[in-house]
Length: 365
Ligand SMILES: *Cc1c(COP(=O)(O)O)cnc(C)c1O
Figure 1 (cartoon, protein in one colour):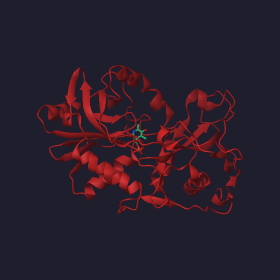
Figure 2 (cartoon, helix red, strand yellow):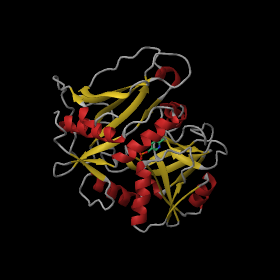
Figure 3 (cartoon, protein in one colour):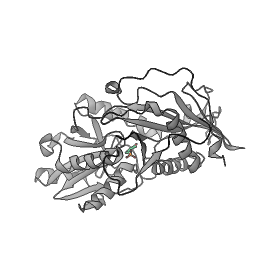
Figure 4 (cartoon, protein in one colour):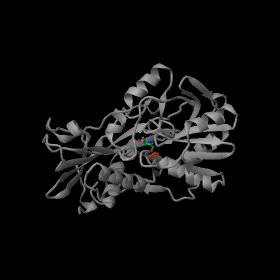
């Protein structure tokens, strides 16, 4: 096991010019540093280091390019009004990354080292954390199979990398409902496959449906189960919730749905607020029936990027369903304000979700 204190730091001598806070976008600007660590079968993980943000050079035969052995994560650090830096439930991302690693035959990462790497990298790029309303520092850890060999077998070499990007308010003009296309032809994942893992192939496989939906004026796709094409799974990179007749429903984790950290936080928050919440199978017929008879009150997606994305309209096999007159529902707004308030440190955190990043990391800087 690598001692977390042994993370070497090579300072970037050529700091980039930072983009203006109102023009950040999502995942287009990157900070001055990155974390890198190598793996070799005979040594395990070794040489953890923080280095200037730079291209990675790989052999064209590196296994990641051919067989897709790669995992990623996504989490955010927030700057509070009083200047502290908070991470939202980083331990959950670390655990999920190791579950994804396990599914894709990637070696496990040391959890304490992972957290220490996050803390030290954020500390090194402190001045990149935006402070404006709705802004944050998006953190993208990922692992790639680097062994140059074309045999189909787990790679014997890997790199674990963390990059970071200051991101703007997802809704510069306040939260806005999105239009979602219910996909009846393509599927995202099946039970027994890799739907539960945050691995690249799931996203590549979804692009075609997403592009087709965009052409029709829908921003994302709602996936149905891969066997019956009946039960609701999730949206592109968000889990989904529906409020029907006062009860909030979300599809139960079944092995093909991504176990979202925003999803599980939302369930905890709803329980805390004494709002009935059920995790179970939900068929698209049941949802449409509730829409037709007026009991479907609200719908929203949850994920790290947008936190909550209200759904204002669905389209399934040519039938449109307008929800809440296409406006943001009261509960969606309340949940959004509560969770973002906790994340930004402006509301109390009764769940102990936020982890403070110290500005003076261990020794090296
Ligand atoms: C990342 C992701 C989510 C949301 O997970 P969070 O941990 O809440 O960000 C949902 N679905 C898919 C497919 C995802 O990749």
